[in-house]
Length: 261
Image (cartoon, rainbow, N blue to C red; front, side):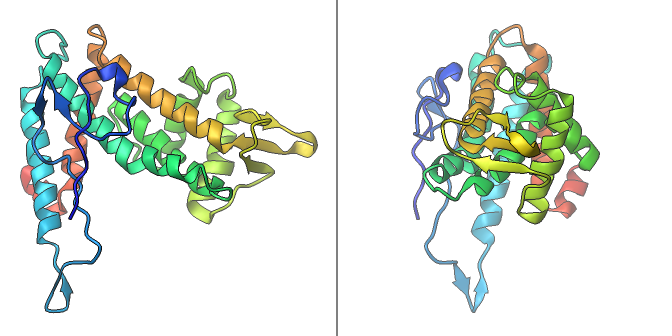
């Protein structure tokens, strides 16, 4: 069994500046839920997979996160609650870093990992937008809106995407990869430095540079974390609070979620 090192998140604007994964704030650590349990073999009891530890870790995560949320200012005020909001931002940073960014970074060294990288990025794109808006997409139409909104509003993407191109990306890249493991209608995935993030080619082809897209999305996430720590951005912190509440509710089994609601 191993556990991750703590993330140094004393300065929210630099949350992604290190490969270390810690939630230390002002020398304090936010519980133990940030640690990831890893075993080389499933825990077996009488020939069945033993999942009690997994259930307990999930409940511990939810319990500690809800305990933190109960202490966050209901109006999103930053001043006087910097450490609490810093911990909430650290929870989000750790979740995205460990589940998406680290994996995509490792895949960039693989010549043939373009589909895998962009598939992860398409999931991450909608995840980031859900936290930014405080509302997760519940159907394909809402996923499309979320994808277009981020690609056309982010400073890292909007020079490459208008509404039409972002809609094409959603249909021909996002849907193609996540549903069929392919891109569609002449959209290609490349990694060579000579290609822009998105670039038109002769014959109606369109290239997505998987490395530049991935790095742009990481930069957008980093900027989002920084904006969360700007004292005036109370609305942005309130949407994070709503998104964390939704995360807690969705993480429970349906029976527990119903009784909690």
